[in-house]
Length: 472
Image (cartoon, rainbow, N blue to C red; front, top):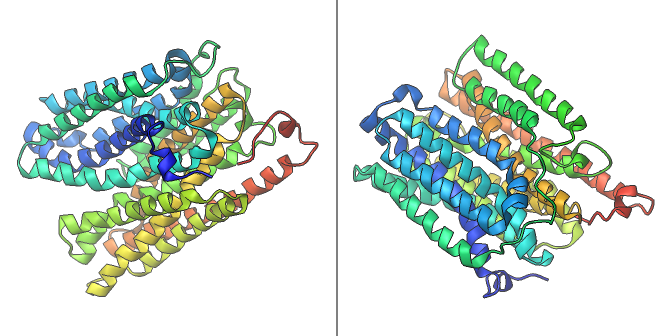
């Protein structure tokens, strides 16, 4: 039976700070940069490249997240984290010192490469530095860092923007990254994940998946037939990725994702659904200002309400260790998320009363609870799929890759649904809410399918069970 005291005790505190700190640095940077960009554009120009600051960061982070297992095999836990923090710090320095938006994009690319590694390393290194009974709480704590980032990022970014010193926020992030490097050097082991050399880089898989994510990201920036053409192209590239991975000797995700009776494909799909729906928060401040007449700060806290629910439920549900309890939260999570979004959509109306506006915060908090309670348990299920160290490292890295891909695709889908619901802003809010609610409910079907696969694997004659698969 795990406890928070044990996880944060003397023996585990330092590595936990490094792993959670890496995710927090990633999350704070995302929300801090969003709040600073208007000030940066007013200073250095580049309005036409505004949207690309996030697109470049996100696409590069997806690429680097797919290299986590190979990075670990080649450098080990300590050096992998040092490199990731150093790359992030270098990119942050470039972004903070950039004289033009073009230079800013170079910095964002470096940041994205380091951030993609940081996001994935925590879920892979946790197997090396913590006992198995502590995985659930450690994953919950790392997942909760996104809620922390959604609060700290806008507050810090808004402060530096308010004093007309947006570059100072990037300087603060750099200092935080350097402090985490110092912590890493004394907290993490040097050893590699296995004694085998790092596998070859799956260049074709990376190219196909990057093409798909890039096409979806660009599709959210254009209009009309160009949007649908790019979405079709993204689907074809995604199908090409799956087809190539099935027969490739070097791949991004473990072979069991595509073959056999492993539940891993359903675990990845569940994370894709939850992470994609979470991107609804991108438009919540816009709806709050234009529909509810809220100020920027109050409207910003609509998105924060979703993240706070995520954080609270992630921590609260981390103590559930029975198999029945784990399955219950993985079903109740998407049910709460979808229900919260339906209620939010129904509450969208012109000239809402103060009571209706308060209800917005409440139902978004409930929806966030759905994400938090399910996401942490899905990540832990992915960690427990196999006992094989090399395959486990690849499976763990794939968890973060799935989340980043979903973030990129979900943001593009959100933009598309908002456009389809327009030009009326209330219509846009409803179409986005109901569309993402339907996607959230798909997570229930995914969970039920994973449970069925897992049940069959427990049968005594299961070849995968004989191979050493652990219960999730």
